[in-house]
Length: 194
Length: 194
Image (tube, rainbow over all chains, first blue to last red):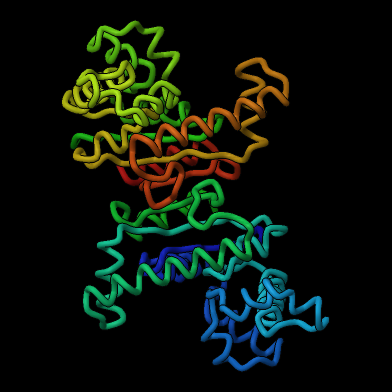
């Protein structure tokens, strides 16, 4: 099989992770998600906890460092820059090793030279709230708040680092809304182009 | 077969019309495009030419009438409102008749009560410019200008009448970028959910 890099962006609670896992199984290629954070942490020497905490959010300190131009003043990288460099390096290493399914982490943009197949997974808010309730043991109103918050963070993170609009159809090769389309059918659709 | 309303939004020059035609053939159901304009024209008594000229653009006079609240002042509909009502009525009649593939015309929003399967077709700019050069006999720079202009008009028209963002993945059930995915594969993907 030709080398395949498949990236999956997703709305919070839409089922993107499940699509990624099942796709990787079907193609018999590695699946990366939290593993990227681990590798990045090892590479950068930053603690796993710190990166996990700041994962996929644009922190105030990063925005502050941008506004204040901290790096040019001191010539030193901010912790966020070290994290991003480490994640980028980890993504490059993963892609160098061979085929992979990679969830989130702006991998579609970071690995653009690899010509990845870029998937975006969405679902109606109602469905996402239901999944988050069940998965994270939250009330409906808590789940709704979390869905809104996480989408906002993911969008800000992507738009900051990919210089593109998160969830805009033409940024991706295939966008599947898992409201009318089942995960089984979504996998079959993706497999048609593999 | 259960009644199916399939709507296709598309970037200019992406190939959405071809996808729609071939899908309608494969499903053996009617395909609507300019035909909607014709029906709308008959219904409203407006000339076919007038509607064709103003099709999928938000005209200055419409914006003017919104700003000035012309309708409330005079109690009369503007020509644009008559056109939109007629198109809406035509879409309703088409949907009432049975299954259909409908291109553009904010049909996904207008026919939302019918629970349509909503497709969006995009393609990289390079590919779209090539198609428009060939199809419309334009130079590369003319085609590029037309692609930008038409996308802008479609986006403004959709955002105005659908109260939603044109080309945003989660507004649709399936968004296919015809850069890496062939039209044949796109049709096969769609057919998996029919």
